[in-house]
Length: 154
Image (cartoon, rainbow, N blue to C red):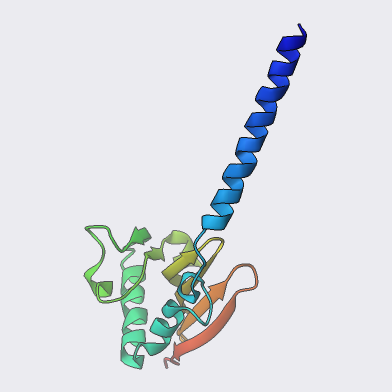
C-alpha cells in the first residue's frame, strides 16, 4: 500500500515537472516579435495603408458602395479565396467584410492584419451617405482612427 502511494506521488510530481519544463522551453524558444507583427502605427500594414494614393482610396469607397447598392455581400471574404472580388485584387488585405449588418450601419471593412486580439483595418464610413470617409483604424478596445480620404457629395 505504501508503495502505491509513493508511486502515485512520484508519477504526479514527474507529470508536474514535465509541464514546468515544457512551459520553460516554450517561453525561451518563443520568437521575439517584430514591429510588423503588431497592429499599430509602426506596422508595415499601417505604412501600406498610408501609402495608398487618394485615387485608390476613393476607388475603395466606390467599389464598396457599388457592392452595397447591389447587395453583393462580402461575408468575411478572404484574400486567398479563389472567388475574391477583382475590384480589390491589387490590394494587400486579409479579409473583406460587407454584409447586411455593416450596410445597415453604413460602413465596410478591409482587414489588413489581425494580431492576437486586435486588428488594423481600412474602414469605409458613410458608405451610402453624402459624406463618405476612408479611415485606417487599429487597436483593441480603444481603437484609434485616422481619416485617409473623405468627400462631401452634393
